[in-house]
Image (tube, rainbow, N blue to C red):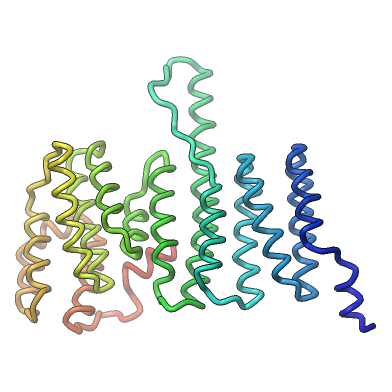
Length: 322
């Protein structure tokens, strides 16, 4: 028997280890189980038994997350994606489903409302709650960004899986104490769920500071356009107006919104001079957010072939690295 076959034979079937570690987690020995998940999965990978390594990591990630061990579960979730890369697994629906199952185990814990902040205990409790929420978001973000990169490298879509982008956008918005709408919009615009994106924006409009609503809407439209997606840029505007009317929210009427309306009409035809004129006429509105200038550079390149002054730049690409 060769040394390789001997080492393979020393390892029991993966299912045995899954059951053994499951019992450890149920007993509350989260850290001990975590170390064993990492060590044993690495052993399976070393002898080429990647399928069992993946099963072990998926089971461990889901189980730790079910017990709200977010740091442990998130680490195993990232290791699951790294194992996909190591095993040279291509993106497909079956593995997307496995990633989805891990994602659904990430806890969703509503933030407390109406706390009496004059009480030191309440302040301490709120601080702990906000810290835990930040950890959840960072952990899930690390997992899904790794999965998006894997799907981009091995799948058919250079932007990465649309569903994975939608998952990440939704989790960041729902679980962050104060949602970063730039990151939320970035991922929704790379996804394929403009209705969900519109619903999220209308929810944000109902609780944001005055003057932030039109910025959020413009950012969403420009991000769609910066990847050449004129259809969803139009769809999200229609959906936001419909949802805002249904919720009796006032749709912002500002110079920035006028610019967005004119821009959407302009991009439907070959009208580079008009595109440049709009940028000049509404420059003061565009300059409310420096990101808009960069996004419009991307849009000019996508729709009219206008080369950027610095081809290595690009706000959308730089944001994705964040």
